[in-house]
Length: 131
Length: 389
Image (tube, rainbow over all chains, first blue to last red; front, side, top):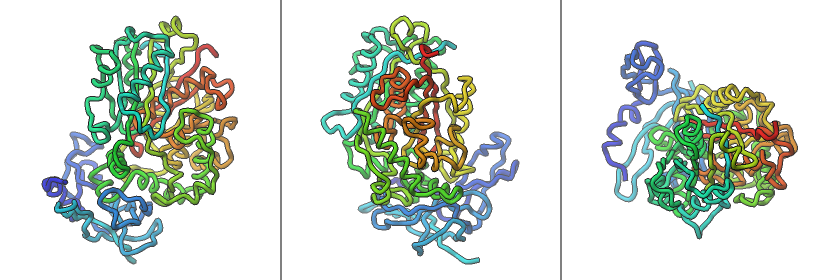
């Protein structure tokens, strides 16, 4: 069972898609990094609120789920390229069909529950949009 | 740096070995490797052992100490190496460096994983730890799903087909059928693969390597000493390793493993060789797409041509470049920490012409390619049989 501190530490990123920008090289990172891998100690990292929109870069449909995801299978898992650059892995919900290039937007959802009486973990999933 | 050679190799049968535990497996592989080298064991001055997850899988950490103890090799130093599915290959590199540097004169390098003592879902979660737990696994990714994301993107960019992926599995089962150590020694056809259960579309059960128990070991010595004790020492002419992002989504491209490309380039430079000089290779086919990417990234085929190479039998024994004569991870099995060592065992047999019905005729130069996770670690070794030059 997960300790609640692990969930607390990730709230800005998992609830709000807050990452980092390096003021030295202007590279944006998601998830949040405290150290710029490009500039290393010359980097100057600040928090950055990403736009919740992006595009599907690749996807799969998971039929053999890991522990905790049994009730959702089969589900679509995608790599989403955020409009501002970084990519992330997330489920695509409220549809059975996606294609590479589809436009998506972040929604706030339950990701999984620690059974039987553990934490409910929240975070981002994405939905298709037309814009 | 001194030249380093493999003087002895050994491995267990790979498979679901219900009757045997972790220590039985590694002990058998180690003893076989020592017997193969005609050594008693007193000559050994260090042990390296690749194993990914004995803690979650059998409740045992401190695996290197266990190994020295049960092999009767105390008090020499014994070190465990962990690099997910590349644990074996990275352990081999540590052993190579220890001998090349002059620090040790005789090193045994083992690789082992005992995977069938816990239920399947627990194994899947444990293997997931080779990826990014917080940013991939948490959101519902599994290892098949991560490779499926590569496969889908590859199919999109290069118009590759599910049949091309399936051709890799068919070929590896064909090779595995000739290997008495393989988990699966049965040929399959394209239909078997395409009609098998979907795991993470487009990957099906037969696109995926299995859960396996097994161990393998090699003995390393300086080449000059090796020549005095065995007829056919196999020289390690290159050892290269590279790292990339832990999470797949942080890569610039999903259709190549940059760590493979960099490690391959360094390895060929060290050896003074080119991809076309290689006669036989064991590459990391944890999923069928992984073999296609590997044969392109190493340089055997152009980017985008790996699928047609598989479909046109160019990677079969007798083809342009025989890949995974052991059956690969797909058919020989994938006891995670043992895989990188098993690759070196197979290439040694090939270069000594001891591979029986799967022998690549006249093989002089071989290559092993071992990947950790989705490509965050890659280690490549090139080997040759000096007696053939």
